[in-house]
Amino acid sequence: MLKLLAAQPDASVVIVQVGFSTNLAKLLTLPGARDLIAKKVRLLSTMAGHFPAPGVERKAEYNVKIDLPASTALFRDWPTPIVASGWEIGDAVRYPAASIEQDYQYTPHHPVVDAYRHYMKMPYDRPTWDLTSVLYAVRPTRGYFGLSSPGRITVDAEGKTTFTPAPSGRHQYLTLTPEQRAKTLEALIQLASQPPDSLVRR
Image (cartoon, rainbow, N blue to C red; front, side):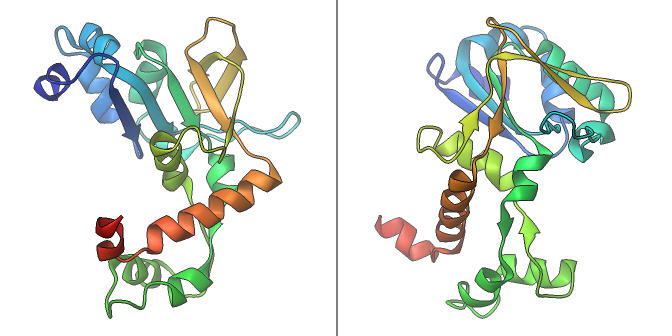
């Protein structure tokens, strides 16, 4: 990983983290890693945490709580901007069963369709937790999401995340209006269900 980062232009790398913070937290412990990350990485887009509206109880989000030491270290020590897609974003944007059942028929055994069917009896709409952080990383300026003010995300002993606004903070989290939700869902459906050959032609 360090060799790969070192070969990239400065401030050119966007890292997407879905799942646990284990690998990136370990990367931070390697000699010289923090300085190299600060030089090469422009953004870390991560699906992690829960940033609810005022008055709503915070959840200990799964990706954070399963490896709590790693999550704590990542938000404490990562030296570049972080944008978090919280639990509430993916929960609000649910990939529709109708797309799973209709939009992937260009091949008889699509892995996405097979995975949905094996996970739970169809039909059901599935939260797009990981997809939202990927979409923001790839298309950050398309208006799919809003952003919180800058600040700092911390993790408590239960795995709950707290966002504290601070003008010099390196952390932000995604926000979502009803209009953005509709736009984001349409983009995810179109991008995910495109046949591979049509993407190559583009």
